[in-house]
Image (cartoon, rainbow, N blue to C red; front, side, top):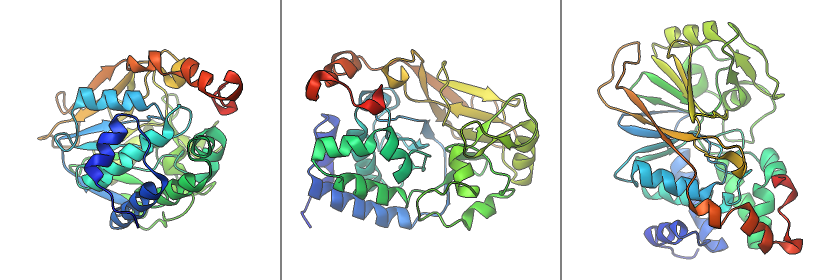
Length: 322
């Protein structure tokens, strides 16, 4: 295997320069070894900055580091959906993977519903890998690595973090620990629910999800889950929030969304959530958490859909992007 310098790789990626395919292969292999040692429920301590969906919006990821601080000075928890939809999924997941490998105890990556072979073949990551590297090999390295990503994180034994939401199959967090996660995300069952489900402020219980996977869940489900597990809050991503975040169920659940002007056209704000140390008890107090709201990075204006279309054959964007 080719030797590589992780710090040099990170510097190169921060300039939005692709890494060589053989380097990415080794980085993915070594990251799998790190991820394999993590359980399905990873326990971490505050302070930590929590990041929601990024979806290949590379310039906005760099903007997050500008606002929140670079690792290892800032601890980060990313809630999944690193790829698809945006123009720079390869650069985004390459950078996050290198940062995880370089700072394994300060960068945590949760699996989202887009960290799967099936979804990435439809929504852009597969096509982007083939376009930028000339084959599907890099897509294979990353999607194999996705099978190793953890499913959930608990901050300070009181904040439960997941990409999507809750499952009718899971009452206790201990039940997550025994899920076989080292596989493609299945169509149904607890693993699918954790990455696909959404809260519904109008409901009390579980209901069929309009997404066609996972469930919607209401206030009673949230209260019961928090009580059984002695938790204070559920923190998740997965849903576009026009203000960058939303808080439901009497401050028992928050959604953090970190892709501003989603798909370069939604006009939404984004946020990162700073979880501060010193919080305790069964309720989140003012000052325990702070949503840092931000707008799209200015670089998107000079290297966005218009400019990328001109680089493609026929001057068009890929079909998945339209």
